[in-house]
Image (tube, rainbow, N blue to C red; front, side, top):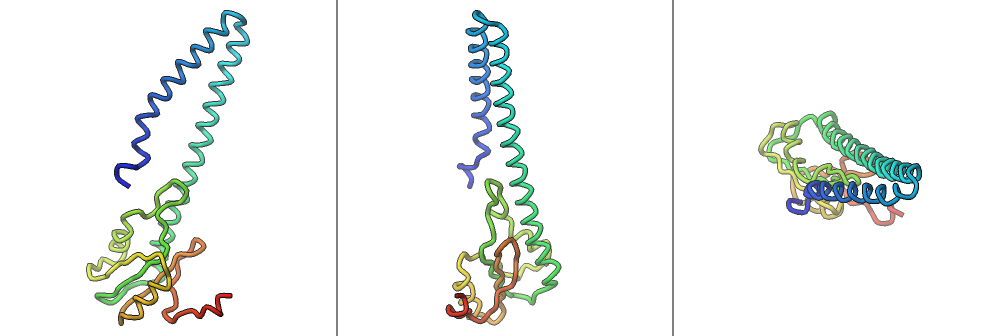
Length: 169
């Protein structure tokens, strides 16, 4: 995540906007010699078009970040309200906890910190898995383990017994 983060593109945008400004000025100056009204109308259309595109993309990004925040809030609130406390040295497996929603980050890091603020227990072991079957197998080997799965926008505790493949169909 570090050196490939999208935030490093922000500096390049300055150069892009300077070049676009010079291009708009150049188009305006070339067309102004022929027809002033046409040059002004085209320049305004280009500026309005680019501004509209920027505003639409900005709104899309804001919606993604809002949804990412709501998802993070929902996960942590589910844990806090439905699972009041755990015993010491329990292991919690989390399957499919989202890292991103669209282009917005949900839990690339910090998930464990959020759970710590809820439970204030340094003995809890938090593990993230991508495979439910693997998490269930790992939990079966331990006496004190819980498996939580994030599906369809909801966090729920998975059953500890294995789901038969015939039941899935």
